[in-house]
Length: 214
Image (cartoon, rainbow, N blue to C red; front, side, top):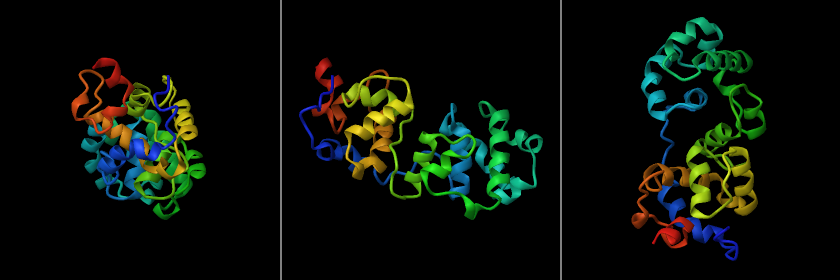
C-alpha cells in the first residue's frame, strides 16, 4: 500500500524532514573530496563511527591520491585492517588511485563515479550530495531501505537499487538530492528499528506505521 497514492504534492509532504536535515553533513567526518570518496568506500558494510576512528591515521599517511599511487595494497592494509572486508577495499582504493592519479581527477558525476571499483549508486549519490552537485539519483542506504517502506512511500524490498528506482519514479527530481539523506537521518535518529520515536517525528501525520500503531 502507498499511503500517499492520492497525494501528488510530495515536496509538501516530505518538506518537514528535508528542512530538518538538508544542512546536515554526512556522519562521515571527511575534510575534502578525496577523504570523502575513500571513507565512503571503506564504510560499505561497516559503521561510519568505525571509519571516522581509523581515518586520522590513514590520512596522515596518505593525504591524497598521489600518495596512494606510490603505495601498494600490502602497505595500505595495516591502516584499514579494522574495517570490514579490508583486503578487498584496499585493492579497490589502490586501483582507483592508479586510475585517477590526482585529487583533481576525481569525477563529479554519477556515471564516472560508479565506473570506479567499490563505488555503487548509493555511494555515488552520497558523494554527489555532499559536494552539492545536481542529483542524478537518490541515496538508498540501509536506513532508507528500512524507513521508506515503513512510512508508506514504497513497497518493501531489501534491494537498494530497487528502492532508489521506486523513489525516483515517485518523487519530483527537485528533491532527489536531499530526500535520501533526510530519510536516512530520520531513520538514525527518530524512526529507529525498534521503539521509534513517533511522537516527535516531523511527518507522523502522514506515516503509515504511525497510523497502524496509534
